[in-house]
Image 1: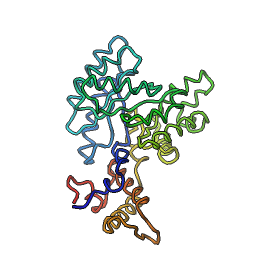
Image 2 (image 1 turned 90 degrees about the vertical axis):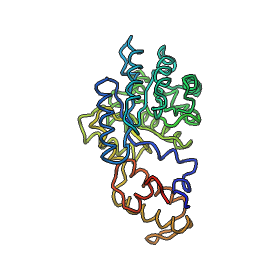
Image 3 (image 1 turned 135 degrees about the horizontal axis):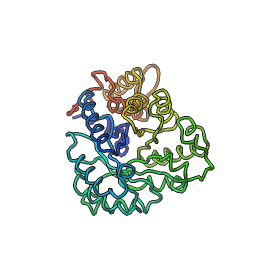
Length: 330
């Protein structure tokens, strides 16, 4: 039996290609339910789950209602459709509700969660604190995703990314700008300014670099101008093509499709990737020549990741490529 291209080419890096490119956040009950419904509908239509739904406690829970909100998140996760990718953002590790969030949500619904997002992570010690809480709730192997939101956290991003249980690093734009006490103008939080202000750009690149250095997934921050699709699409394209991000947050259903499109390879690249991977497999992964260019495992790895990203984003694949994503690849 032939090995799957993922096993041959990615080995320990396989985790990078397995996360959907869009992570959709919602914290109000009606919106959480609608988000899960939309995810189920798109999964059925496209044949794969193209975005995560993260149910939000940090911004979603009303003051004084944290316990009830955590119970609601657990209930919604347990009731999600089969195959759904549902996550929870809990409160920061130094918040009074952190342990209760984890005990309620992970303790009751940990088996249905794809990960737990921990905001305002400042250090490796914060990650270790969160990992202990997951273990205490009965799910020590549940992946952690962390939100980097301060200059000090950016400074420690490489150490945080090295933590084994960390799966992805996200950039918290709003808190990062606010942490500078007015030294970064408010325009730095906008769709355009966040890609031009030097301190914000530096932070984004540090986080992306730290994630890639340790085989983790860098996830880009929100764009608050959710009603302007041209602005949203441009920001998603910059995040994907210029800043090295492999995933992006959505805070409104209208942002999901532009993110999918921006992070998707185009039809020509999919066709090229298919031809190269099929030829490489036929050659037992020895070097080949394609269109007068030499290709070996280094380029095979790139083109396989193109096909994985195409599948993740619901792109139409040639029949030869579809076979790689069938339940039983030969």
